[in-house]
Length: 292
Image 1 (cartoon, rainbow, N blue to C red):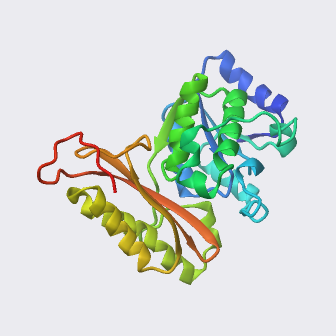
Image 2: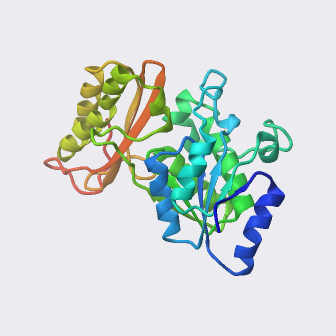
């Protein structure tokens, strides 16, 4: 059976009903299209844990601010279908706005709570409301057993997991590591907006993360200072540099932490992050809460 494409709720249900009747496991990868190797990794992860692979392609208007790039966000539907077919996807769900928002974009939404107002939420205050609302709709419509999200959008991953737990969706949320190019640049659909010079400047994000990892044995202050030094020496406007625990709380010595950075390169806003393990400075004990 070749790749199926569903554009409406009835078409989606008709495509999935046989799988449900046969008790086959369904895996979902929610995307906004413009697929790349990072999406391939998401698809591959769900395929190992499900019998039916579903990819949604929907550029969600409610997660874009008024001055953001919704109108020019890259759209490459036929190329995306070709990629899905090559990756063994069984079904692509490609709804229009009216299908996803039958009451309009101003209808019922999912509020992200306090974690939606930090880091990305400072610059993009309505972003996570839009993200969680559309993800909740997709989880309801597809009813997958597993759903994969990339760690590149780390705050999004944490919030999706929190929503799934709070609203009691019966789905396992998989976090998939960042896929990078050989020079360290994290793959992103927005990379297509970078010209050659901008792309060189964009490497400041991954270099800042590497500097933070190298400084991790010296504690939180050293990690943040090292990352900020790299970003300050590069062309681009820094949005934030933050160090958290894996749940976006306070980092603890001797524990896993997450270093998150965001910056603008020309007109393109990029984010990146990495995990690291904080060292134990002299006189400190494991579990002590430290801050910048």
